[in-house]
Image (tube, rainbow, N blue to C red; front, side):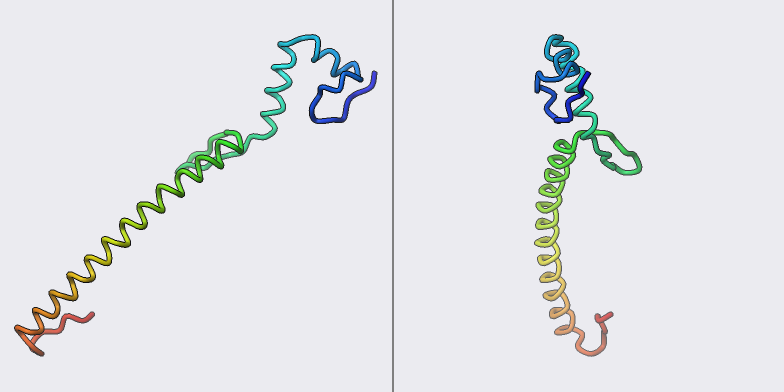
Amino acid sequence: MTVCTSTCCHCATCSFCLVFLCHPFLRILLFALITLQKKVRLKLGEAYFDCTEEYATEFCERRQAKFSVELASLTSEEAAIMDRQKDLKAALYGRFGKAINLEE
């Protein structure tokens, strides 16, 4: 009995592959075993989840896009707050002069 060394397992030259080609359930089982080898661990908080590499990549890309949008929103909010702070400091220094110190 020769064993196929190819990763596709559809060579139909060895008895191992012939068995899987004849039995659809065994082909599904083989496919499941092959996909299990491509599992990665995805860390969410303190927990790890087993998932496919493709799902983990898509998940990370979606999260990165979400955080990029959130970061852009927070950056623009920070700029608005800093402008308001600058205006308030100018108004307070105009009213009280050197009697107050608003610098850190």
